[in-house]
Length: 375
Ligand code: ATP
Ligand code: MG
Ligand code: FE
Image 1 (spheres, rainbow, N blue to C red):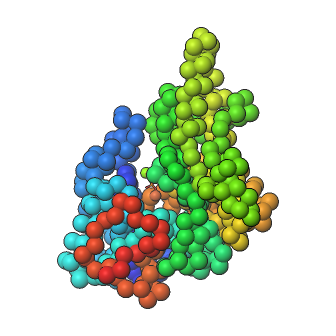
Image 2 (cartoon, helix red, strand yellow):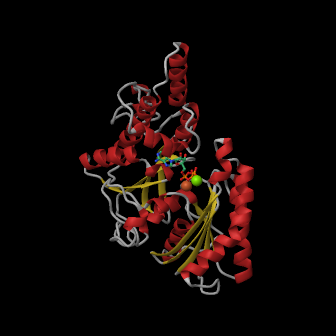
Image 3 (spheres, helix red, strand yellow):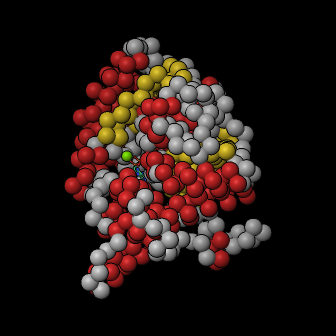
């Protein structure tokens, strides 16, 4: 089926078009620049930006794919989780399109869509090796050319999410194994970059600066790693596969204060490197543990933090030692986009699952177990 996907859960307005598992277009407009001076996404500004960007993004996507709205078989839209006002814009636009064209509408889960993108044909298989969208375009299909591996997991790490999922079926059986209990990893990067005076978004700045620092110079805490949270393989603790990054952020702030109080120069590169090592160490170790203990053999990495060089490297190494294959889609498919929404919509149609109608409301805290909203 030819499916148009719409994404507006955060600061990216995305419209993508797929035919089955083939990616036709992926057009994204981001309001990230407008949030720079605030050091984080301002929901009201993001919502207004979606309103401005939607129609031009839709037109460009249709034009590039060489199709018209008439040709489209179905429309899919992110219905949650995400920022309520931002979701509302995409959902209203999608409903209007569905009513005007008479096409079926699928209200889908943003997190599961991050996994669905792994099915697209442009997807290269990369065992922890950095995959650059531009260079890997057209590379061999990774996740079995439209068929997901049987024991699949997904590690989603972005500005709003840090989650490890088990996917038994992309259309109706997704389970949350672990998640952050406070800040998302990308959020921690952004907050720490602010403390270090590195600007927004913080991830790329810290990633770059960390290469000049010594990650072993300071040992920052790995949240929820104590025995009382981890438990044992026999008797699992309450947060065995969960993360916490707010204590780490506080530890970085205290560390900076101590250098300043002593009148010493703050070793920004060392702190960046040590912070990054703490984040990446705990993300990769807990993700790999969750996979091993659930018989997961393939993991898909998604979200904006998938751009992080150290996260790819360490997760790749640890997966390899555990006999797990790590799949890293091209970066433009890891960050928020409409193609992933279309990709999941196409899967639902091919699985014979019915559309959502137009009576649904966006759900800012939609659980991963809801892959699509039933009519
Ligand atoms: P959502 O959480 O809804 O998926 P988002 O807009 O918050 O969306 P993304 O756009 O996927 O998240 O990713 C943005 C986040 O990724 C920011 O927090 C940014 O700092 C982080 N990031 C980007 N590049 C890197 C990098 N190289 N290293 C670490 N973090 C990075
Ligand atoms: Mg974003
Ligand atoms: Fe996302």
